Image (cartoon, rainbow over all chains, first blue to last red; front, side, top):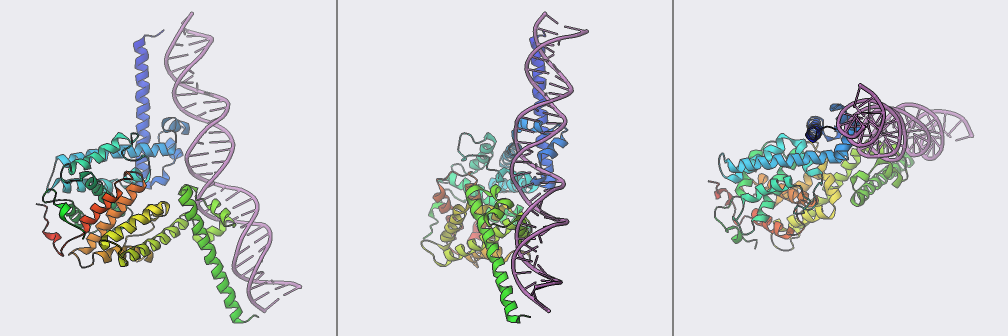
Length: 206
Length: 206
DNA sequence: TATAAAATCTAGCAACGCTATATATGATGT
DNA sequence: ACATCATATATAGCGTTGCTAGATTTTATA
């Protein structure tokens, strides 16, 4: 009988191998999607890329959709980090400006990644317990932006997110002319920059 | 030889038959999608529903995607009409309020239709000549809203559309809690309702 | 009524997601 | 060092998909 230590090392190595292969699969999926679109990300193609047979992929992710979901979660993690960075290291102008630019830059530079993050309904209602932590982290960066700034900062945050998402999507699907993007961002920032606190309440619909 | 009139009547009847079948296919696709999701809208299933063989569908639309595109165009037509109606018959509050409510009502009541309208990139850049007239019509209803109201009304319109689209999408994909929707709309309307003309320019970022 | 043309169907291909089953590889106990 | 067992991996195939070539039927024309 081998020592317990040796058995542990073996188990650890196997775990590392598993994780390495898992990340290989995710990377391959991202790469193919970004270059050739998600329809070309097939299980057979992925199993070719990592030189394993198809059932190995199913052992890891259960289904093709499971692979896409893993990619999406990775995307939310990266988006959250990018927003956090933008919020803390304000380059020029307001933090709203900085975060908006970072969000749209993320969406524009990895369109396929952004697509899968939102095309999949991989999340039950947003405040649900089963919502991936990465997703909540990303949104929390937007929440921080308006914390205590207005009477209903949560609603403002949701609205800000919706506006950014709308711009990103309409740009990605070529509904917006590629020009004028800077003007759109400028106008957006103006809308969401409140010169004084609590002032917005006085702007009435009448 | 039959008279030229008879030949014409025959041609007209054939055209009518074609159009009737075309609209049958589109209706079936919409119905299935709305109840069972787009993944269940297969060419075989549709050919079953209309009691024709598959090649007939390909004669009409060329491909499965062609069918979805036709549904999407029909959706844009209906959305445009709904927005026009909301803009002209203002029920309560501002026209902005009325149009926003109509837009979100449309998206919420036909989620599968709304999904296919934007998931497909069936349109080249928005101002392109090949952009379906129905798409332009729908957007023109939003343009009218802010016409001459601000110095850059086109940008404001795009931003308004983006916000509505973002809300619709994040709601449809369950990212937003179903509650608070009214508050979101109220806040949105406040943002896009400018008490005086040309004032928005003075709100500076600093 | 015969012929040409138009409309429609049958049958099948390649590729897909997925899995039951077989085989090979590696760890374990004597 | 070898036999045994478990684990990891591969092969091969099922059912379904989008799509189409070629056969067949139906319809219009002379």
